[in-house]
Amino acid sequence: MAKHQPLQFSLDRSSPVPLYFQLSQQLEAAIERGELAPGSLLGNEIDLAGRLGLSRPTVRQAIQSLVDKGLLVRRRGVGTQVVHSQVRRPLELSSLYDDLEAAGQKPATRVLHHTVEPATAEVAAALGVTEGADVVLVERLRLAHGEPMARLRNHLPVGLLDLDRDTLENTGLYRLMRIAGITLHSARQSIGARAATAAEAELLAEPEGAPLLTMERMTFDDTGRAVEFGSHLYRASRYAFDFQLLARP
Image 1: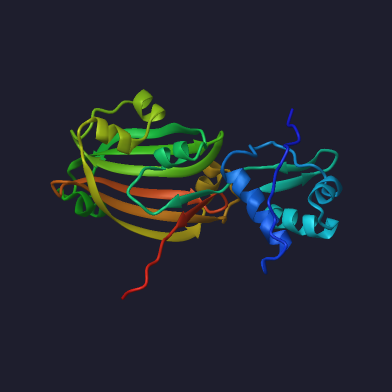
Image 2 (image 1 turned 90 degrees about the horizontal axis):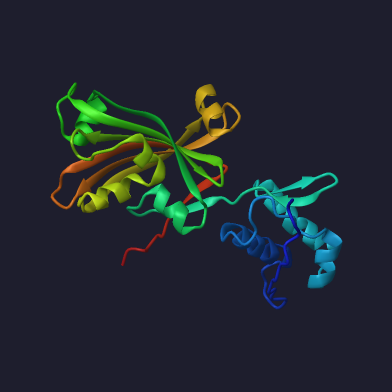
C-alpha cells in the first residue's frame, strides 16, 4: 500500500518567484529523482500548508499544476498520489536505456521484432548499403517502472553485432556496441511530433491521436561507418528532450 512521504522543502519568501511555483518545482524535482516513487501519497493540503506555513490555496495551486502535467492524480478516498515522472533526456549521444538507468527509472525492454529484412531506400541511404540488401531490424518497447515509454526501431548492418532476444531485453543497444568494441563517435538526429495511430496508441498506452515525439538518428563509429539507423516514437506525456543553447559570439 502506498504511504505518505515525509517531504522537506526550502521556500524563499523574499524571491519574486511565486511560492506555489517554488513548491511545484521542488515536488516535480523530487518525483524526477525518484524520492517520490509512483504510487506515493502526499499529505493532504491542510497538513502540507500548515507544515510549510503556506495558505491552502497556494498548496492547492502547486499540486494542481502537477496534476495538469500528469505527474499527480487526486483519487477520492485515497488522496493525492504520484503517477509517474516525466523523463527529461539531454540531447547527447547516449541510449534511452542508459539514460533511464542513470535516472533511477528502472528500464525494461520487450522485443517486438528481431529479424533480417531487405533495406528500403531510406534505410539503405542511412546505412550506406544497396537498396534491397539485407539489414537487421530490431524493434523494442522500452518501459520505465513498468509503463511504456517508447517504441524503438533500429536498423543495423548485417554482422555488426551478435544479438539475441534475451540480450536485447536485458541491456541497451549502445552498451552492446561498446562491449563489442565499437566506438560511437557522432550522430545526425532529427526530432519531430505527430499523432499516434490506433496501433501505436495501444502499444504505448495512450489514447488514439495523442501527441508522440519522433526521433530519427544515424549513428557513426570512429571510422565514419554508419552503425545504426534509429526511428523512434516517444510518449510526449512522459518524455521530453532538454537542449542547451549557446549564443553565437
